[in-house]
Image (cartoon, rainbow, N blue to C red; front, top):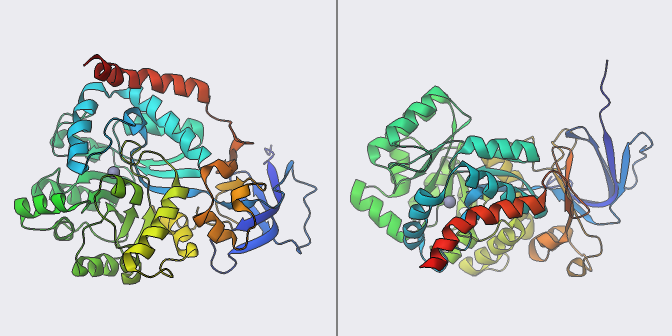
Length: 434
Ligand SMILES: [Zn+2]
């Protein structure tokens, strides 16, 4: 017995493929079969959509690969607005006690569900996510059809879902996962970092960590260990193409070269960096040196949203400003960071981030009648310099239409918002009561 695989044809789309060989196909058609893209056709291709179960007319709207969030703490929607107008150290001083007191599995479930709703509605279907109770987050993501890459977070002190560093290492050695996630060089000792490196090598896992986010962190790590955060990671054997460093803002020239020659991936989070006054990452230098640079929102309590269109725009504008050259980091390069380079950083190259046959059908359709996208001279530039999440009408995540006509299909948004308000009320009420 064979099961029928649903075929959906999206016709008359301005396809922005993220494939440098054919970046844009005007009036094109994408056929989705099950979870995958079965075919991509130009307006002139003879094609048959008669056997499609469903045909969607894009009416000339942009169809682009879903955006990839390379660094997040999605369930921190619970603490959105809890720690504004503070630098990184002030932010942590505020957030860590709140997490210790008010975070549990129920809060993580409510927090991540709303974060996934927000991500879908902002054209993103994949995130590399570091937070507590990852098994709860993963189950919620599976239900909603979101690709969540997560694992337990290693920290050098007790955290809400784990009593000690040793307990966490034991847990990871008993349950190997695709990722090993360590919080930061400033929240662990050198010995702990070496232990993480050993287990990571043993399990051939991918690795992610916060690193070199601001000057105070770099000074602290240097005075404690004698190394900068990047130097410490090199010394521990934690750089390379399967490592993702979040931020990498404070780098000297040698460190930029090192991250380039080791092909380390950076998750650039410009909005979080600006809001915490951490500094501006040398994205153009890192790309030139050979590093992979992907984009992230960081957690919604430091950024404070999950909008990768804004992240793309800030990335382009900051690179131009920082280099003093308006031609620096053109739109196509920034779009690649949110798609192809994001996929490479996360070990998903060839699976997502491009609209081409065989790739997962992770797709976003934008409103053809958006005033802000009219006229459209260069669709890629429109995406980076003008598009926003308000333009998103439909989203497919591995072939599943998770947003249809601006409505979420796998999440009951009303209930999800009620649940999040209820858990957030625990800390908000205490604040009001003070
Ligand atoms: Zn972060």
